Image (cartoon, rainbow, N blue to C red; front, side):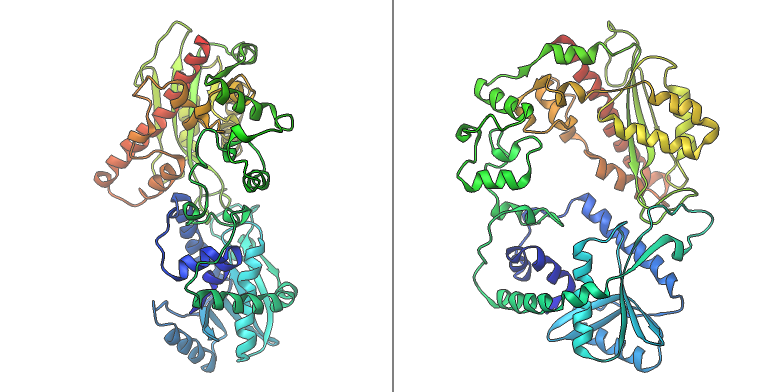
Length: 495
């Protein structure tokens, strides 16, 4: 049976659809971010029911779509005016409608999303539903809407669903999509019935609108090698694929060097010379800015699609943890637990005021504050200042002192082939501090920001005993982030 989600998958890629319909094991399963988005969708779905309170919900019965359809028909025949997760089948196509509401002119149907804007695949979500309902011809359809989050909504005491959501009609779009949807259904049913894997070339569709869980089945084995054209820094994906399709899959095969950016040229030169590209003047531009004491600083944040706290907006970055290493002077040598301060807020309370107060107390009153990609930390501090106006002057003064450790790398001062076209701290650190085994994210239980966020949110409403191990893992991860900055900075000072 063709479901709405399978139809959308087929819209993106016929081959991925064929793998899925044949229950092929994913080679690139969803990451923490994907699971977080799924949870966010469930939370938003619950809130959306308040748009039409008192409705009847059709339960999800795995493997029994026909029963779900029967329950929906019963609700309609018995006079229900609002239905949640109404379920329908036509021509072996199964869809669930997030919300249905009856008006004098007929039924309005609503596709609810946890994003803050409508994307094209949302319109196709609505289009496949409209197609099934139109062909069933069980009732009059008045209008079709996509419901998204209002990113300007700020929570007060309660969430008013009318203000929380943006509701936009897509009736004209789904009507214009109808013929395309019918043709795609025919195509997908033919693919599903075939024993042959469809021949589809790699392309931007492999990553948008969703990352494919079968990437390793189609993409070249050498795509992550240091000399792969897929590792070119900030090269458009279409251009990378164009090079690949011309048989230019490695740096050695590149002839048109002049069209590359300075960083991309550095990549090729570093590979050819088998040595890092170092431009001391570019590095010195950065180091000349530094004023001791240096505060190596890093936030961890979480987001909620449905705000929990006063003044919180949908998907707003909420800092809950920081790590701070302080180097008082250029002669001071730090170990990972020396001159270090760290903080994690209570996961069952709004973290903003307590983390703001702790930062103001612990950060030195002078000197450089060093971050890696400083715009993130500065944006978080700006939001804290808005929430804590009495602390705003002190908080915003911190933003005047930030320096960005990514600058000497992204600015062309240092490139190592082991960066593999990325200047993230997790690529830079092992390349230039390879001898220090203490600086290894792979040894950590929590090894990335997405996992830190989901782990922290998972602590909500858990006992202290259950939480202790997770808290220690969070401390270790954030602590390594700031100590890694210290180690990287010492290395470029040596250079």
